[in-house]
Length: 145
Image (cartoon, rainbow, N blue to C red):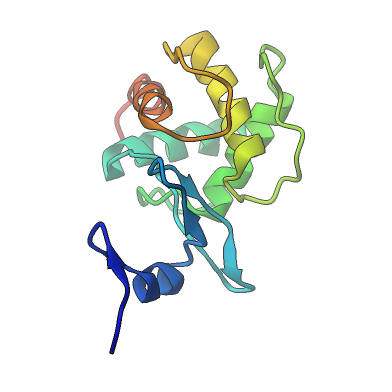
């Protein structure tokens, strides 16, 4: 059953998981694989870190999903609302509030992380190691769940 494998991942497994593409740099480009499924994008966070982000957006930005440690569409919609409306946001999110973690979401997140959580990289829309490390710092600056 010829599954093309590269870096331990099968193409069939990526498609089933809802992941549309993985850039050569290792940064995920995520979107909808179909009308009913979307990939979870924790950007390198463990479950506890993702729960901390969910609890934070629950109280302030309209997240109404479970505190389950899986940053899915609802989690990212609430994060996009934060990135679009927070008055101190240096580069506000200007895309649709759709929960898709694309370049516009990542650029706005990177700008926020640069201002508040020690991100030193470019605002390039690629969730590389620096973005993920700063996102972890943001998550763990929130109370434990």
